[in-house]
Length: 205
Image 1 (cartoon, rainbow, N blue to C red):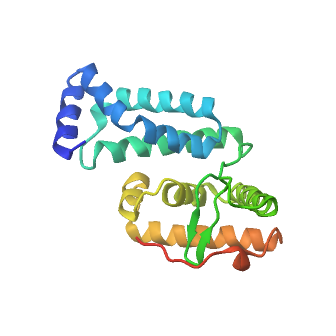
Image 2: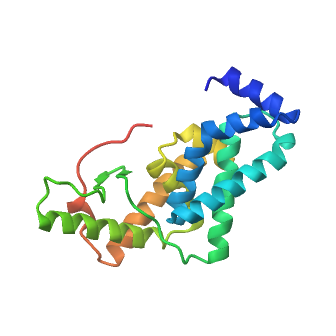
């Protein structure tokens, strides 16, 4: 959706046009769901939280000042709603790993089954994904959210800055520290040899 089209729909929605708001939601519902699913690791919970996000967005639309894109504003609501839910659960939920984690030192393998892998390799990949999942649950909420937004959802630094409402420098610092902390947790607990499991590679901004 082009920026001009989105702005027009926002203006119409603010005037009470339900169809315009529905068009906005249809455009972004999959991304909101994915954010909720990555955080809550449960399909039904993700669906419920997505609906809650859309209701909050509808009720708060009149407060949207349009100094950022509607999508950024919506994703901020989604992230805050999911983090609030995590706080209510007091960390009882775990994260699902189904995408590579990009680090400054390389790439951590996916959990996906690769038909070309032999059984031993498949087992190692599953164990590695489980170990990373365990480590994520030991990170602070601040570190979890930047890892999810950057490494799982693929937002760039500017988008994350807008979603979280902090500077680019803060975003880059948090991501770097979060990745370092994730690595340290894994190494400290001696779950696996981090350096030997990483593949070489660099991440772009």
